[in-house]
Length: 227
Image (cartoon, rainbow, N blue to C red; front, side, top):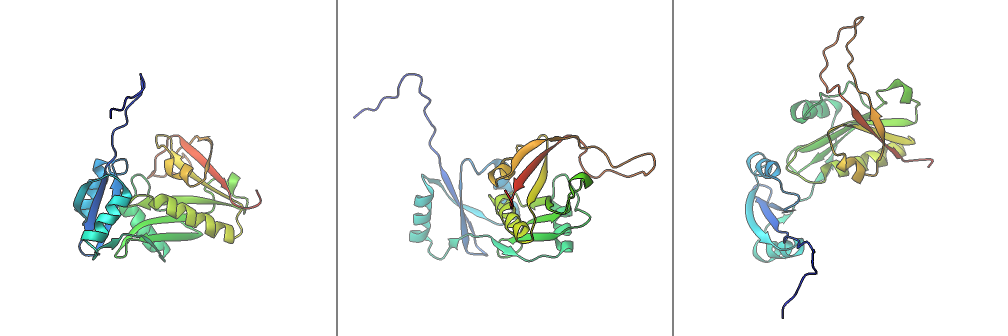
């Protein structure tokens, strides 16, 4: 039997799923074509110690069944929350963040681990803008993750929301650079509130060396209590 597409229809390319295994952890991860860009694969294999096992699964379910049938000694990779100090968070940010140094202070820091080492952190503190520092608003000041892993930012934002709400805060805010898509913050439930002028901390009365981007930034906000 032949199947025909209606005139003008765009035929979707088949999506493939890739299986990588980590011999030391005895774990596997599954990524779709959409999730696995060149940089992520490079980091996954060269920096994180995963090896490609299979690149032709047609679904995640098929990939999982394949691993259960032929490699039952490997378990599905899961991240886990891990307690960290402010110093540990700062060291991680200074080593891995693409464009910011660690913040000067915090209300709390969150860590996420792959079972062997830290692979992501979040810090939250008083709003940097004193005009927003009303005692009920908390700012996510840094989110920094290892690019080999997917959905880490969303997990950290979700955890920060729960903790901030339990601490009594009403609103959570964060900023992204103007050239960033904001996909992770949008997926976490933040609403785009507009652009912030950015700028430099340097002035004639107090010379400072800027260690952060000084261009436009996007402000995102999430109501977590009292909505």
